[in-house]
Length: 317
Length: 317
Image (tube, rainbow over all chains, first blue to last red; front, side, top):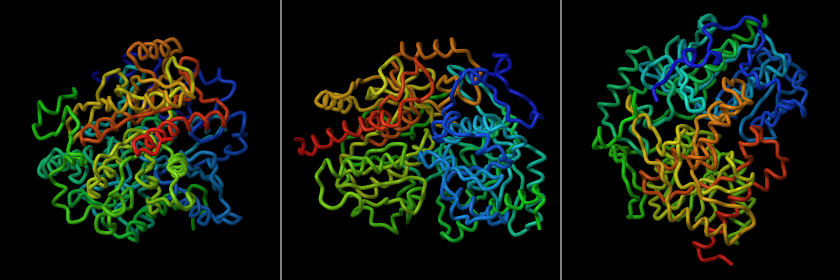
């Protein structure tokens, strides 16, 4: 089942080399217009039950992350940073009707959880992209803020991804479509990454760099951890693999960036991945830093994105 | 990157053809004994911070499912069904310190959520299997109770999986380990599946069958849905693919069974997958049944497992 390039097999597979410029989200599905109602099942939202344009039409920034609690904290933090009216604690989960994802809206910022792993974020992205389309949003910037394992860098370093690579260090995402494998581009938006790096230099309270991010299908065997329920390799084989990853330009490892990059690229969304590293995998496998240290680390991507959003909105002090 | 059989490449990869008989959970990781402390990070539990044998030593049944709310309801339901003392509403989430997973213990039954997709359930299983090992649990039966899309069967039908197959209808799970792909067995425990079918016949209030379950990496393109943000195939190609799946013995599609079967098999856990079908994919893609119908459907695997557990404990009426 060797991966095949979509364009070479299916001219109607809309793999594209560049972001579209219309500003609208680019839905690549001719069947969607034939639906009389679109139920976004995992959000508990729908085109007949909800007025999506009035609920979401003004969204300009979408921030996504794995943990529901973290994305709620981010919404509260952004509310404060943007100096919005009203009590932030009254912010309610728009997806309260389901426990698959949590979603909070704070002015032009949407904060959504996506769970752990490529399949979980992929379901969320399909429904989010349709939501932005139905709501007629324009010029949306989407940023994944997450946690990751670092390779050869100080724990707490924030990595802005230039390209997401797979377990074999290839800059691609293999999407199974029916019984075919389609290879997709996993480049993130270069200018956006540089703008974010610039913001981090203005904050200058934690180390930030641009590098490759490796996206794996599991946390233990797939990331070369020695502490899972199953482990069939030696410490030496682990370190050889991580060193190879470092030499290939990989600075952190997480579990969602490849499909995030691929889907945002295809749908014309300016996308970035900004993850803090919780440990240096060349020094260990277990996340053993104290609770307070980890909490402070997890705030770093949020501080960076808040700075960026305020700058974009012209409210930066 | 053609998949390779583990045994043919790495004699130390513990792929096994049969369940072990010791009764203990079989940890296949020589490095684990060298840890002075094992932090089960995504459960917010650890061997130094928690007395795992006294907390979990008596666990005989582990039930896992995607949704935290559903697994809490299952815990409450089992508490009632087993006629246990105390107010079920006082049952607390053992993983309250994290929002990655939820875990409830009711007598000998552990009820845990695993989120959506192979990577999410894989992290949970690594930490659960280590937990059962540290707690010295014996003769544990583990059952995934979930929801799925049916193929050619009435919505609401409960499918007990005999084997999990991939998108190409192969009875295998491809596990990436460092930069190699290891092919793993995805057979579920045959006698257990038959015992469960027997139980369902004693309930006889909903249709149940044993069949193959297809496990995919996403909900939309990977399952041939026409209603995602991206769709590059025709209605005819979709139906041709689903018909091929039906002809290959596939009766439902979900997103966790393959790694669940593979890891439980390797660790000597008697495992079953019992999923209700929410729709018939030969009739549509959107889950449009009413809320109450879906709630009743989702109770069916729970009723079946409650019946099975009571039978095993000799408390069946």
